[in-house]
Amino acid sequence: MQQARDSGGGVQKILSIITQLLPIIIIGGLLYAGFFVKAEAVITKVEPKPIERRDNFFSIITPTEQIAWAAGTAGKIVRSDDGGKTWLRQPTPTLVNLQGIAAWDAQTAVAAGNEGTILHTTDGGASWKLANTPKSENPNKLFRVRVFGDTAWAVGEFSGLYKSTDKGANWTRLLPEDDRALNAIYFVGQSGWAVGEIGSIMRTEDGGETWTPVETDNQSSLMAVTFRDATHGVAVGLTGTLLVTDDAGVTWRSVPGLTREHLLDVIWDENSWIAVGDKGVKVTSNADATEWTAGRLAEGDVAWRTQIVRAGSKYFVAGANLGILEDGKITVVGR
Image (tube, rainbow, N blue to C red):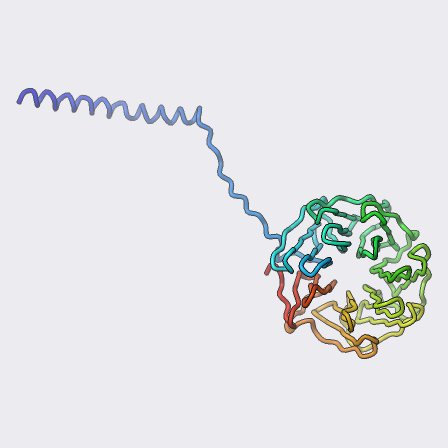
């Protein structure tokens, strides 16, 4: 019995000692952790979506039915390899707005925009590089870039007309600076046409070496021009301006009364013309450009559209947002 009491007393002494030492052990452990253990911050990085609601895309190109590139605000370029189902943002060395994009194929493309910026890629957009471009003391925004054969053309403010023959790496200026912008350009072989502010139209027959002004009665700025062959073409512009030529752009006739909305792009679509612009407007015509009708791209769509391109059975539209038009309905990408 005495032995049991002695044993119990020993346990109590041990517990008492542990109780007295416990605060010291805890404080010591905290001090050790404070001096010798480095805390690692856990940071969760939230990647922005490739296409956000605030994005505007001013230009789009489809080198194949499945591949599409779009360019827009803050130097953003996105690409889809599955017909527009998914998109990836590609890194670019600029934050200026990109107004135009064009491509030779799925690997080689150019983009142009504000401050005379031109980018080019030869690896499908994995890397975009700044091109070597002429400098200017004047505002130097570039509105469109187009590819015809091996040559790329860019147009913009102060009669900006630039040419590249090495896939967009180096550019030369072809016209002296003048206080009038060029908004669009188109070529068929050696014949070319450029349109711009205050109804200006120029044409060339020698691949762009020399340009001749064309006189018309139109004073509204022209925003786009397209030809279906070397003879037949259509130009569109502000306040519903629509001009047609069937003599290679020597003379143009006006098609009035269709709409007062700005028309910002026009394409030749196999056997018809399609023009798009502000508030979802769409203007179409037969191949001869003699029977025009005005409507909307899709019911309920009132977004402004700066460009339309076809890819197989569907169309891509750029502007206030990036959309896919199919079966009379527009699906807005990233919404």
